[in-house]
Image 1 (cartoon, rainbow, N blue to C red):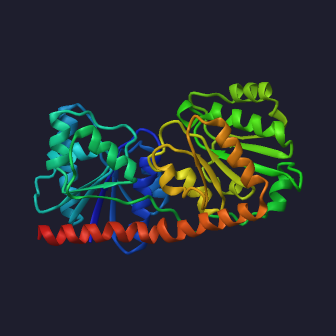
Image 2: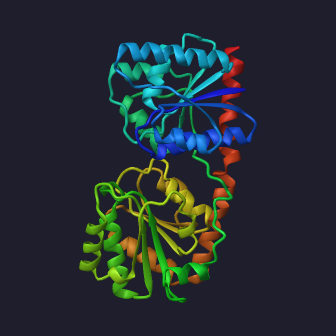
Image 3: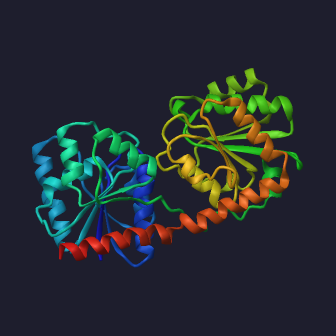
Length: 370
C-alpha cells in the first residue's frame, strides 16, 4: 500500500499534529507514506524529523502558473510512487487534489481535523458529499458539527481519534523535578499545557487557581505555553492580583513537554473553544495523570467523567474548584484516576490502533476501486 498524505497549514496546530502522527503510525506498520506539504510549513520539518518522506507541494496558491506547476508535480508523485490512496488532511489540499488528480481509480479520503468549519454553501456541500470517497473525523463532536453546518448525513464516514506514542513519558524522577523547580516535597502541582490565547481559557485557569490557593497554599500551578494573544507579562500581572505569583511556574513553549509532565499531579484544561483533537489531554493521559476539563468539543470524549477525571461546565468556576480539590485531597483517588488515564490511552489511543483503523478503511477503498 502506498499512501499520499496531503496537508497544508501555515502553523503547527492540532491538525498538523494529527497529519504527522498518522504518517508515523502508518510507517510503523510498514506502509509506504509520502507526505506532501508546503516547503516552509511547520509540519514539513516535523515530518522530516519523524523520518517520513516529505515532498514540497504548494496547495493554496492563487497564481495560475504555480497551480499548474504544482498540479504537474503532484501527478508525477502519484505516478512515480505508485500511490493507490490519497488522504487529504486540510481543506486546501483536498480542494487541490480534486482538480489535480484525474486518476479516478485512486480513492480520496478527507480527514476533517479543522477547528474552523466549512461555510454552508453549494460548493462545500458538493465537495464533502461527492468529492470525498470517505470522511474521517478526529472526534464525534467534530463529525456532528460538520453534519449540522453542512446539512449532510455523511454515508461513508467514521471517527478515528488521534493516537499517541505510548513511550511518550519521561525518565526524570519526581524528586529531581521538584528539586529543580524548588517545589516543596509534600506540595501538589496543577498543570496546564497550551498556547496562551483566550480560547484556551487562560484567565479562567488563573482564577480557578486563585480560588484553590485561598484554601490550600501548598498547591503550585504550572502553566506551559506559547505567547500568542496573551503575554507572559499579562499572566504575571494577573497572578499577582490573584495572590498566586509565588506558586506559579511559567514555561515558554517547549517542543518536548515530557520533562514537565512528570511532576504534575493534576491536569486542568479550561478551554472555551478549540480542542478538536486535544493533544494536551493525550499527553497528560499517557503520563498517567487525572484531568479536570471543560465540556468543550472532544474533551468529554477522552475524559470519562468520574473515571480518569471530571468534566465541568466551561463557565462553572465553583465546579472546577470543587473537582480539583476532590482529586488533590484524595491520594487514592488521584492515583486510581491517573492509572485509568494510562489504561484508556493504551486501549484506545495507541499509534498501532490509530494506524490499523486507517489501514482497514484504506484497504476496503482500494479493493472497491479496483
